[in-house]
Length: 501
Ligand SMILES: Cc1cc2nc3c(=O)[nH]c(=O)nc-3n(C[C@H](O)[C@H](O)[C@H](O)COP(=O)(O)OP(=O)(O)OC[C@H]3O[C@@H](n4cnc5c(N)ncnc54)[C@H](O)[C@@H]3O)c2cc1C
Ligand code: FES
Ligand code: FES
Image 1 (tube, protein in one colour):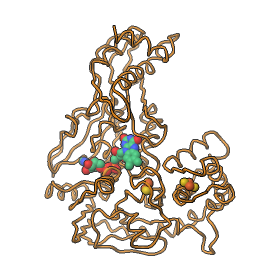
Image 2: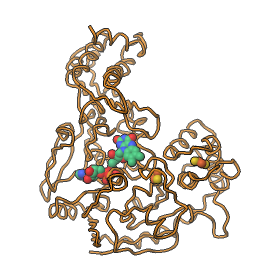
Image 3: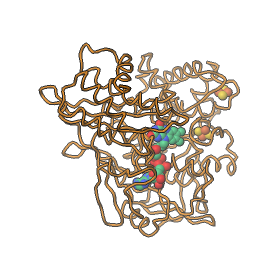
Image 4: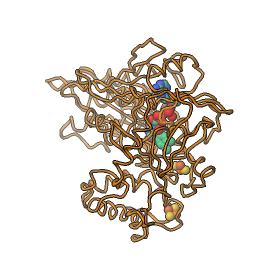
């Protein structure tokens, strides 16, 4: 067992042992290291002013990920290479191509957001597939996605996007300076990996970084009052916004065997507890193509780089985007307490608001998502006030298993934002089962979904809005199944006629 964490900042190797469990990377950088280039804006993962680059070995390869330092707990850096905005100039002091492009394109006014933008832009510039950016619409999408977690309130985004394109094209043709150091940084990170469990103790508390799922199970069974932290994109806010003390944290992402993500022989997709949304994305999108647009709108690139798929389930939020998707797909959750394992259908895990089917000392080892049956129709829709970086008002994920004769053999309709937990719409499902995909079936299901839920009115949406949207999303699902049907916009009125008698 080791009693310190080791990581690089720039070219300096740090070993730290005396760490308060809740110390954030941002506070450490600014208060203890004087690295004030990294800014504090919102302190909750929303604005991107604190963006830094974390390099890690993923399947042996060095991968750079932009993360929000304000909600990244310091101990998470074990085994990593950190780069802040102070580290990206060349050895001769030359600006990084991204910085030069920001100057050339007038991408900064007050400059407060600028270091965070620059770090997100550098993260994109280090990607191997830069050639795809070359002037295509797809390139715009790649850029917008990379910058969606950074807010600017004075320059405006157009010059920043122009700077990003310019820098990306420059790096695609001439190479990117940090990428040029890949072999050297990979070698130094390999030396940091000793496969040991880490136990940090300080006056303020303790952090356990188990090296394996077995070590995690043992540590958590011994202290079920400890707080499990995976990516910390929820727990980080308990610290920065609710000022909560966390006297014993047990890390999830240090367990190497929980990083597995892949297809099983029967075609089901296994996502281990340590797998982030960014890591799972390629396989998830291939597995559930209809979910792609929603998955790319979970938080921002910085959030998805830290947030785990299983943390999105473990937090049991009624407005989490992952649970309805996995529920509609028929996923099962694999739970473990000490050496005892059990499997529950995901929909049975959520019992009531803030209450899940999980015992003290039990944790999620992974989620198994079965393949969709042949001929299934799948629709996944996230409805939020802003397109990017916003929490859902309503989230609908639907899978219809169609018979050869065009009837709906089975329907799994899962919603978020409609109740205290993510839940299936059992009445609407019953209205569809065994029926042809016709206007009459749609209206019956729309009327039933109104009875399935009694949503709340809150700052995101009124109960009326939520119920109306929940019904209209079914029209969106049915639209391609009913050639010549009226457009979805008209079905709102039709549905209201049905709903209000
Ligand atoms: C700016 C911002 C934007 C966001 N946007 C979205 C969004 O658009 N959609 C969305 O769905 N979510 C969003 N979130 C919420 C959050 O990012 C997700 O819920 C994320 O997937 C949580 O994963 P994590 O690994 O960071 O969890 P953590 O913060 O590490 O943990 C969350 C909870 O799950 C528990 N937990 C973690 N791992 C396990 C495990 N293996 N077993 C049992 N319990 C476990 C923890 O104890 C804790 O209670 C956003 C968050 C931020 C900060
Ligand atoms: S300070 Fe706003 S995302 Fe960190
Ligand atoms: S330059 Fe002022 S907020 Fe972006």
